Image 1 (cartoon, one colour):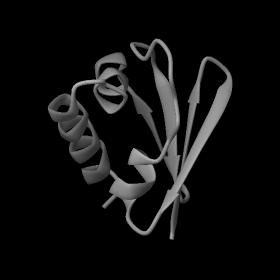
Image 2: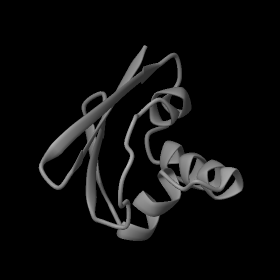
Image 3: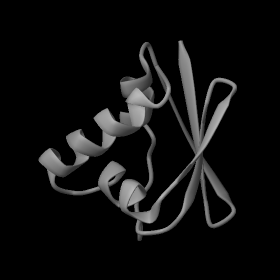
Image 4: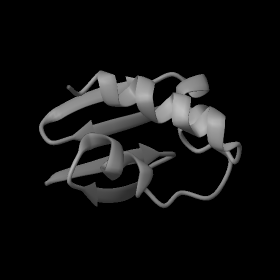
Length: 76
């Protein structure tokens, strides 16, 4: 079980899943996403570039899939 926590503008959002990708997909964030963010999965922390954050929460399914895949690779 993985727990993903992302901090954007001082607020924390979480998601849980069996894999890193599932945990990233379950983070519920609605709002302006082109910002730096601090993502923690387990004990590993990564600072995301604004473009990576935008892709992670993109309304376009293809763009979102690319973002989730690229970020999940950092934690595997």
